Each structure stands twice: as C-alpha cells, then as structure tokens.
Length: 481
Image 1 (cartoon, one colour):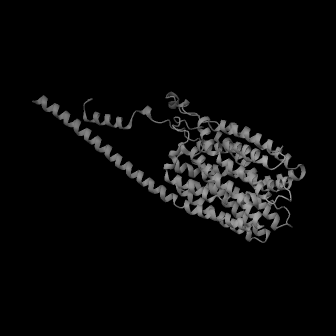
Image 2: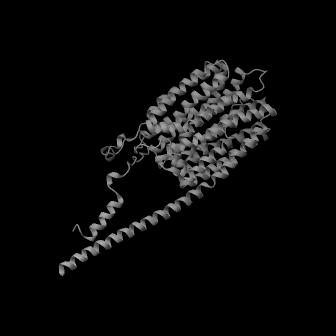
Image 3: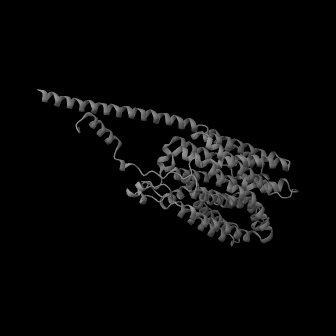
C-alpha cells in the first residue's frame, strides 16, 4: 500500500505543506474582554494623562509667558512655543525606538519605565528659573517618558481585542478628551492659586498613577503547543509569541506600498495640526479681551473630540478593511477648514462652534489610527508600523507651532498662522485617498500569484500521481510477463 498512487500523492502534499511543528507560533485569540477591560481603563488613563497635559499646554503657555517673559524680549512667544511643541514632537519622535523596546521587553516593562522617566522630567521642570532648561526637562525628558508609556498602550489593545477594537480604541482615546475638558479648568485654578511650579508638581500625581497603570499590561499566555515547542521563550512582546525579530528595526514594512503612502500622508497633514492647541488661548486673549472663561474653547475641543472618538471608533468597526482611511480623509478636510475659519470668527460664539467641529473630527482622526495600522500590516508588524508613523509625525508637529509663533511675532497677529495651518491637512487628506486603491490592487496581485502557485502545485501533484501510477502499472505488467 505504501507504493500506491494515493500514498505518493499524500507524501507530496506533506512535503509541500511542511511538518506541523514547523508552523510559526500563532498568537492566542484575543479574549475580547475579561482582564482586557482593565487594560482598556489603564490605557485610557495613559492617553488622558499624556495628551490631556499636552492639549492643555495653551494654559501653561500663557503662564510661562508671564513667569519667564520680559518686555525687552520680542521673541518670547517663539521661544515659549518651543517648549510645548518640542514636548509633543518628542513623544512621537521616540516612538520608533519605543516599538523596539516593546518588541524586546514587552508592553508592561516599557510602559512602567516610561511613566517613571516622565515623572522625573515633570518634577524637575518645577525647579527651573528660566525658559531654556524647560527644553530639556519638559520638552525632552518628560516627553520621552510619555512616549515610552503611550505607544505600548496602543499596541496592547490589539492583543486583547479584535472584533471590538474600533470601539475600545474610541473609548481609550476618549480618555484624553475627558482630561482635555477638565485640565484647562484645573490648571487655571492651580496656576492662579499656587503658581506654575506647584501646578507642575500636582501634575506629577498623574504620572505616578500612570506608573501603576502600566503594570496591568499583562502578556497573554501562549498555548500548550507553543510552550511544548519552546515558543514561550521566543519573545516578550505582550500576547505575541513569535520568533525573535531578525532585525531591530523592521524596514520591510515599507515594502507594503499602502503603508508607505499612509506614513507619508499623515505627517504631511500634520504640519498645522498642533498649532491651535498651542496658540489658540493666546489668540483668544488678544481677540476677545473682555470675555471671561476663555478656557472654554479648549474644553469644547475636548468634549467633541471625546464624542468623535467614541462615535467614529464605533463606525470604523462597520467600515471594511482599509476603507477606514476615508474616515481620516474626511477628518483632515474638516480640521483644515476649521483652522482657516478661526481668524474669521469675530464673535466668541462662532469661535466656540468652530472648535466644536474641529474637536469632533480630531477625535475621528486619532481613534482609527491603530485599527488602520492593523489592517495595513497585520498584528505581527503593527508595533513598529505605529512606531515609525508616530516618529514621522514628530517632525511636522514640532515645527508647526514655532513657525506660527514666529509669524505672530513678525506680523502682530495669528491670522496668517491659522490660514496656513489649514493647508497641510487638505493636502495630506488628498494623498490618503489613494491608499484603498493601492491596497486593493496589491491584494489582487497577491491573489493572482497565489492562484498561479496553487495551480503549479496541483500540476506537480498530478505529475507525481501519473509517475507513481505508471510505476505501479509497470510492476504489474512485469509480474504478468
């Protein structure tokens, strides 16, 4: 029987498929809940602490101008803007490095270490006597710590959730909106009562809680089969127990054309993105001097951003595959348009309406970033895919606000700065429109190649079957003779 044609075919199929033990270690199935809900809350606190403080930097910006500014220094707005923009830029600039640490040491260790560094940076910022040391303590040390705490919070969610990933990402990113709503009021009260330096020390409490929250990023256990084959020691990257990466930086993901276009289009759109967060409060103080509770404009952005993250996060679950990118295109169109409308608002109520719309689509852009990355490169490469993207985002987000501050110092108003800030989102959104077409074209090519490969294997099997059959018939004919 071992020489039968069927046995020959089976042997060929086994050789083509390879041994069962040679299969790569598959990650465990996302539990879609359980401990994952606690991970979600911890990630929400992370997003809130990191970006709540960053988005409320407009209040800190005004306080820094009063604390360190002088009438003789006509470039103080430009110098002070570097503190907030350097901080936001460094958060994203460090992300490619953070992704490597995440792959090597796991989400939990990376996040805990980052929160500790952020605590040190923020505490040391409360002891400076001039604006320049803040570039190091607040702009680099605090921001690097936030980066190491933030990026693992994006990655870990895809390991605990799959079907509900859009909704969970919406809830988590909404955390920063809650903080953006409340922190401007808290910071204003604290700054007025205890001053800038004691306010920074109070913010250290947020970083300490973030330090504790990082311990919840527990890696999922591997299956029994993986443990038997030695998979448990292959990697420490959260639920993913793949074999160790061959390269520290996985540049192969840029061979995915759709991802490469995405990694160019998003940074291109963000040259003007952070300008309103830094300069809007200063603009409101100049344009609407008689208005009270000016912090309400940042609150409006925070409120509708939270709504947008929940709403569009849920909508993204129903948008198939890479077509989720069209939601980002829509968001960039409205963000650009609203930035251009800020100088046109002569009534405070109109400015609030613009901020409400801007916040809504800001939430849309942020909440679906991780789901799109999973669609473009898959779970195995998503950590570095997000890391590279956030690293590229650091350049425009760092450069934009100081340029806007320089325009304000030269021209005497923010009008030109806000008009120009609206242009890059429109251009970046136009670039992103090509991604679904590129992705679908690549998928068709892969399907075509796969179909051709299957046909070749079938022909090989058929040839082996025929050769085996002819061998059997020859033996039978020889025995008859």
